[in-house]
Image (cartoon, rainbow, N blue to C red; front, top):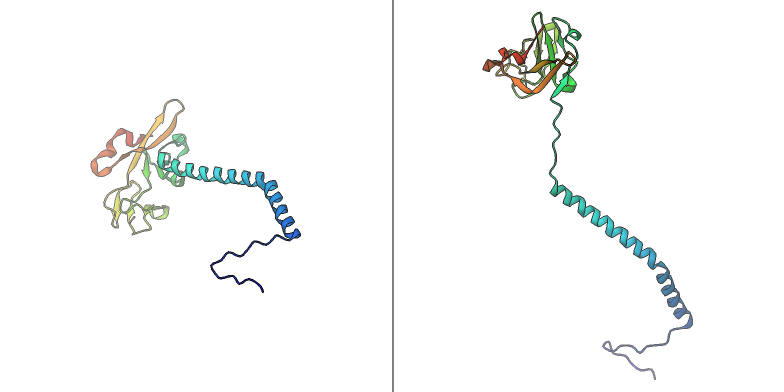
Length: 190
Ligand code: FES
């Protein structure tokens, strides 16, 4: 009669069949052979994790640096600009119009004084017109229509005596409403 096993008893060990024992031995062999591969993979995973951690720490240790756009640039020779024209060659790259008349040259900053949109130069209408809310400016930069509260600003402009080129420096700006357009750095005599 076979012995009954209750649910709380551990069943007696039975000897492994020959083929099962061989299979287990073989698996052990494979595990030993794979050990270097497993170790290498683990090292790579650890290195990747440490690298990620280092990157995160770097973000905390070194604050984000804001690279401001270039504010000063050379704009060629005065003779490169025609009298009576609003020159748009620097509008896209530096946000500047260069205006030349019979007496002076000046650099207008292409930022609407209402809410900062970029106006367009409308040669046929002889004015700058802001597409956002309709402010209009004469070629001098003075506002005359729309919600703009004050004229456009002018940037510092001067000649580099080493090569005769015009230099425009947006780092220094001149406001008409403060009487700064009479400052000799706000225009060039031509
Ligand atoms: S931003 Fe130019 S009119 Fe409003």
